[in-house]
Image 1 (cartoon, rainbow, N blue to C red):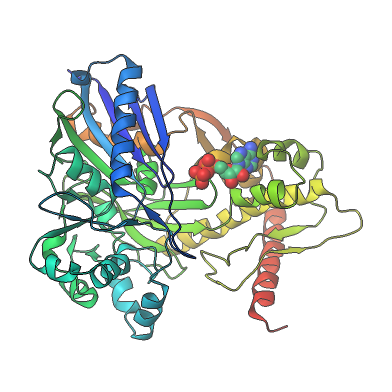
Image 2: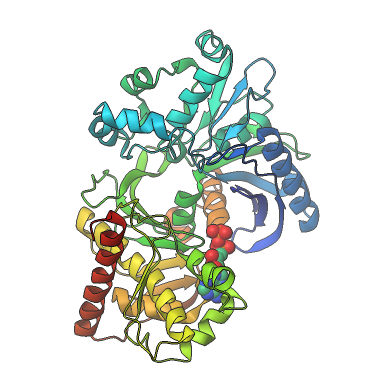
Length: 497
Ligand code: ADP
């Protein structure tokens, strides 16, 4: 039986390909960056053709490096930057305009007007999302409105829409399959997460012709075959990047949570077979679908996480490298009473305050840069505590531990502080490529390389577990101070002082 899985990890700045064996071990990988376009203030675009070509090139490169024959690959799994919106011609497969990237803010006004129209409750109820330019619906509506002839052509069935997963599948199958999975569909703001179908009422609201939408198939399922890699290989697993990371971390049980510490922080909690509506500013979305079984998730984001360390390095110049934050912060026993709220672009979950700004409180004559660096690591941890607390309250689920990945998890001090401030064990897995691994697992499950999620869970290897040592009373006292510092950041931004 074929034993190897090829994961295509199409990210915001690079396309990557990784080949895994049936034990989840990496055999070969390749990555390529592609062009970012910023045509106007707040606009972000990609060239969809370049996305596909770079993805195909790295898939071929990884295969060549692995020394395997294409026929050894049992299946392909795809994971991708979410929400990015692409429209192309059915007849030629050519995009009609640049891809509008999830980060692009061009539809801010459209979103403000939607909110004014009172659509927020309907949208949240059906899609689990808050109205925001991130999600695909207003981007797609923008294309239909602004690309000459697009709406008429879409109505005549001449144009197709897809998120990046769907675009890759369409191109890999040379136009034979136009399909996506529920974890990606759920990010469009057109998909009803309860019925798992495109929502008629939302399609009308955004004036989107149903004919341009892809078919939605289970995340571990059949998305056709590609012959572009030298053999006929099934595409059998698809999930958006954050959901794939949750799967790659084996967060299969309700109450399991992962945090990715990158530029920002992305937290997802598996809530089981029922969607949980949030009161705490979290999004409700689909994790994955395997057969008829759907796992829902709560999602929260921290806007500035590792980016605060970048600011210490590049903005203040007090760190030569991000990695040196660990030794400098460890040179002092505590922050000396300093709290840093890195609300550079406002605050995300659970505060949702766009006007809040970065704030440092508790400075004294004795404060040194080491205290500030330590306060920055603590801020990354406190912000994570706030999101996990919101998740626990919304879902009413017990969280046994936090699984972590992302670049900043190389920092052991960060993870011990996280454990102390959260009061839970922190688990760092041996494989850092959790996103690609999740896509490979889904594909492997679909074609029978793995029999069950239980079997996959036995493959997961732990690098290290960080146990909490801080007494509960001290933890509560420090959290209370952090929340006062957050109030200061919000109060200052509100202009009410
Ligand atoms: P992204 O995928 O968002 O670009 P990565 O997962 O590559 O991010 O993580 C990079 C981020 O992590 C940067 O913001 C960097 O400042 C931070 N970072 C990297 N190494 C460390 C470290 N040892 N300690 C603290 N932060 C770190």
